[in-house]
Image (cartoon, rainbow, N blue to C red; front, side, top):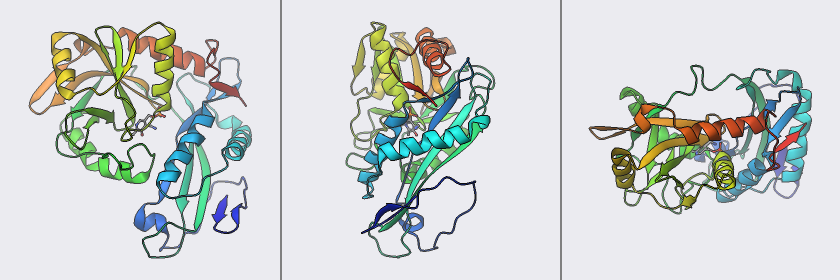
Length: 321
Ligand code: PMP
């Protein structure tokens, strides 16, 4: 659907995937006025199709849009449109556990105007595509580079928004991490380069002295929906959850002393991804003997159990199509 200032949203339609025309002067190309989302539809064990916390994705999209000076979308309408789309695409929702239909809502400024200002014309669309199991070789622990030089987001910036610019800023560190044999980058805060923020496409969690510790939502990290789900599951299990600042020194020290029993990332794509090693400068620090932690595995099993309909969803997170 499209938005035009003075007219509001119009021309909503569902159609076959195809290219569309964009002016070379469009705001999105020059100033990155763009926000997006990522969520999934799951084929449950009884054959039903379920969305997971889709309304939370549209809420977050609007929070991101506000930061990028973009008009709000009608969340209710977008949600209904998504349900219609998934119904049409139902044969594309794969059957094997671990697979899903990935859903990418995308929203961008289209004004053919080369001036630094918010666009007056926008396009919002949702595309989908089946994705395979994220863990082709099982739930293997990843090796993470702690980034010392570059930062991803600063206070007052766009860190909490899901917008292209944040990912553009992170690409160079990703290239360097791969050169060092690492799978992901762990970002530190921009001001002091001292506190843990998040990983490329995941929020970070640590199990320290039996408590689940995760960086608080301070405006510079994405409020992950998987993060919120794991916190709710942990509290439900009676585990103490601390949302607070966690310094990289604390991470390294507790990992070395063994007080940290597990570290893992959470995200829609990876669900729960255990960390086996942190690379910090010349040092490599191993967590939980480089193996998959017990709690990470439990969170993975409960989350995917709910998503694939193997476990009763007591949280009300899934909705059938
Ligand atoms: N942080 C970043 C930067 C991300 O791109 C993602 C993936 N959307 C996450 C965290 C995890 O968020 P979610 O659990 O909502 O997928």
